[in-house]
Length: 170
Length: 100
Image (tube, rainbow over all chains, first blue to last red; front, side):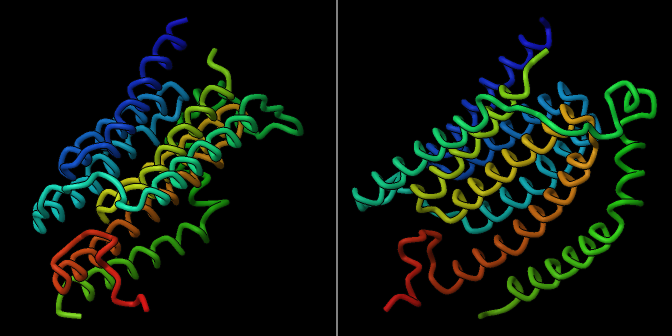
């Protein structure tokens, strides 16, 4: 019962702040609402018993990535937008139409999810006994070792790319 | 117990909000924020499936998605800064150098 109440509160908060992100004229306000969205998503991850992901969500997304966004917004200091959306009325209509069609499609698929086939080897009780972080770390350094190493290369490439792009005139 | 469908429909709503923001907004920085929203919707679906399928693989993949998002934000914002330096705007409509 408590879980349902918490889920409804967090879900409504997430959706409202996500809508507020895309209807603000000032990008700084958008960024602040996006941080709120990330925090309520972290709460939803806690409801799903993914404690490590919730912590990483707050540290990496709300911390690192959004600080980067705010830094760039304040560095560029662009003037407030005069028009919120595209000037072209056709583009606006097509955009909203595509969004609604996508929501209907995904919603219809997700409304009735039938989970068939074999379950994985980590039922909630086992994860609770072992500890969420331990299980994630164990998988990360055994089954997913190659993707983990490739991620480090990706981060190196992005560091070099960001420095080259931001350093001098292009 | 909240059903899996509720989490997935929340994820679908978040993703659609991201798509609409991406298609409608003209400010490049806000477009990037919409992309982050879509990535978060995918993460939510991953975590929900991982919980209800008794598998922890989804949570590991969420970590990879987050590192890709961090890399994307760093490079994307550097591109925006480079564009602003030459074009003096962050409006996607005015970035039309390669349009013929």
